[in-house]
Amino acid sequence: MTTPRRIETPRRGGGIPRLSSSAAGIATTVLVVIVALVLVSVTMSAQLLPGSIWGDRRVTLMAAEKEKNVRHAMKQLQEVLEQQASVIEHLRVAQHLARGERRGMAFQRELEQALHDTSGINLAAGAEAGAAVGAVAGVAAATGAAVATTGAAAAAAAAAATDEVTGAATGAPSPGEDSISSASRLVPLTATDATTALDPTRIAVVVIAYDRPSYLERALQKLLKIHPGGGAFTIYVSQDGKNADVSRAISNAGVRQLIHPRRTLSLQNAPEYLRKNPGYAYLSVHYGWALRQMFADAARYEGVIVLEEDLEVSDDFFGYFAAAAPLLYQDGSLLAVSGFNDHGQAKYSSDAHALRRTDFFPGLGWLLTRRLWGELAHKWPEAHGFWDDWLREPAQRQGRACIVPELSRTRTFGAMGTSHSQFYNQYLTKIALAKEGLPDWRGADLSHLLRDAYEASFAQQLAAATRVGLEEALKTRKKGEARRDLRVGYGSASQLQMVCSRLEIMMDLKAGVPRQAYHGVISLRVHGNRLLIAPDYKVDQDVTMSRLGDWKPLSRSRVLM
Image (cartoon, rainbow, N blue to C red):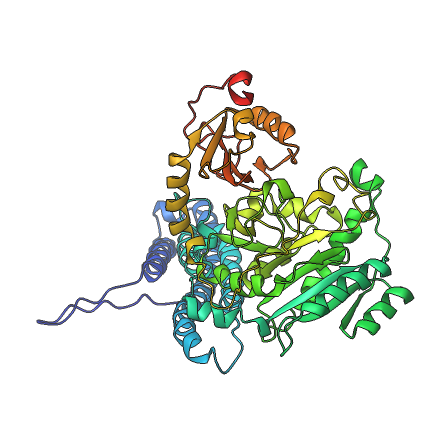
């Protein structure tokens, strides 16, 4: 039997010894056992007194049964004490690891600046270690839950300690944090460190290909023509299954090849639209596989630009991505950098220098970081398909924005493909590729795109813009007339779609976010004027929801006239 801890009387001038809550619980349990033993001793002694009621045979039998029960209870209590000790030890180990992880993450941040120029930066190491600590804490919590049925004190200790460990190790957001909390908790890097981390030699390009060798040849020809060389932007082609013509195109181009072991997917239980269009499921599976290959070596690439075999790029494509990439590690409110503008028709885009933030993920030539892939890899949609729409959902977007150019740096020429030419003739063929007046991106200062600076400038532009009707905004600017910022309002998502229809731009919403919109505002350039199509109510990202709630829908005549 375990003896209780002796508590010494505090000496003069000395500290007062303190028991941990777990030790106090054990001591209390042992005292209960001692009381039970005293009662048993009294009972056994009473049996020896002749002539008393305790000498009655029935009482003797009852006492024996009581003694048996007490011994059984003692055995159970001993097991509980051993389990409690095991749980406490698990929790101490987990807490020790969590404290070490916090120190390790701080130490890692101090080392990053010193190691940037001599070694690869593995910014995912902290997250992986945090996941390991979370796993240890999970084991401890599970053990605590098992003991909880026999020891309430152990369960309470397990809950408290596990909360401390998992909260500290994984950086779980506390109640009240905003929608970008989980993204912002990543430590932003300085401009210098971010540029080093996402140097062009640490960014790869992967072209997703299937069975269109002529398209692939055209795409690779342009990429190689403008490639900067010198170890920057290593080009890979990820081929979905074996195809001799596709392999020949890759070999002739002299780029690196990945071959995805394509397999037949079982889609019997998939939604009807996916069964009718299985290409989206196969594409999503291939995307996930290719990204895993690209990020498999933690020391090799910190970013990957994803293209498809039917995309043409601008002459300054690599310069643009080299300049914009560091923003992703300077600003936790950014999701990705894209080279595509969904509303980039020639009549609505003309400034090759202009870059914007948008809440809409465009795809079609985009850069993601190792940090982002660390978030997405474990929950990639795989055969569920439609990976791009999945990435646009709030659970993945987490309130973050993308950087896009006014004039697209990518354009699709794929008349035939998985999407069966959806939007191709109506919208995509009219996208203008940046060709003239291209900037020299070397040393470009893009700090105005960081959230705080951009929000302030954006709010000023919106407030200063002249309110006009849509038809007036579309009028040709008179000769000698100064360029202006114009604002056309809308009072609901349906009214916005009416405006988009009149402008002949894509009008669909993805998770409530209009294409190319920022806080619900779509920016176009019409006859040299900047046209802001803006909600007349407060919008975070989803135009179907108002953060302020109270707004009055505008009439159709006010919007269109």
